[in-house]
Length: 238
Image 1 (cartoon, rainbow, N blue to C red):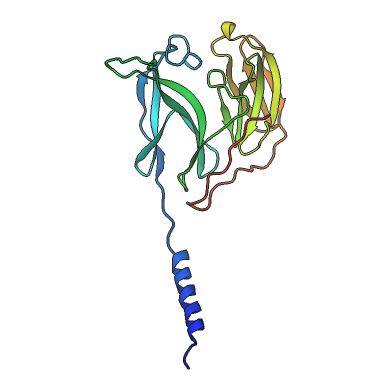
Image 2 (cartoon, rainbow, N blue to C red; image 1 turned 90 degrees about the vertical axis):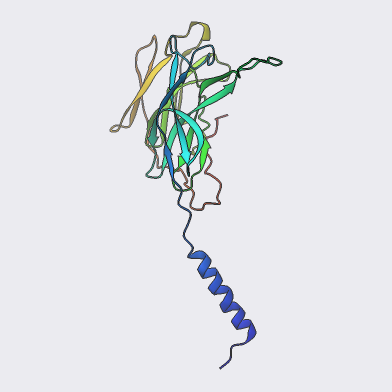
């Protein structure tokens, strides 16, 4: 029995669709390269460099054999496929109209990045009240704990942010802040405790301050399609 033209067309379309859906997804290769040291000082990074710091250890973030970003410090695995790492920026330090024999570029510590090993997507995290020169982020699960600085620059806060959650889980004022008189560092890294779920902040010139956190489920959405846009990161709280 012969098939009608319309039925034959539908069979052909289904066959093509099936072959396309069966095509293997592109496998991305994502990783961090070897560390190297670069010149670094307060002259180039007034807010980020500490007194006497003259070099910075950096390493490349590589996706499919290409250097996508430069990073510094240790990375933190959030899930079995996503990790966070701090970006380092290479900034042009040449003044307007300045024509030096050698180009002037300086390194500065920057924001944190969320990297998806499967999709290869890289997105910048907008952590609430995060300040590159003040905030030393301590990670646990998908939570970031650090001392934050308000937009006015006059108040130091204890902040806990959860990835993909708009408002901070914790935001408590620790002290007034005066940049001219700040200690080095402003805060030591926060310490996490699993049971009970607690975080302890260590601001300079003050005693340790602890807060118990009400744990919530992770809400980070990881891409399932190469063509999808990266999941939205935590946005700056209003």
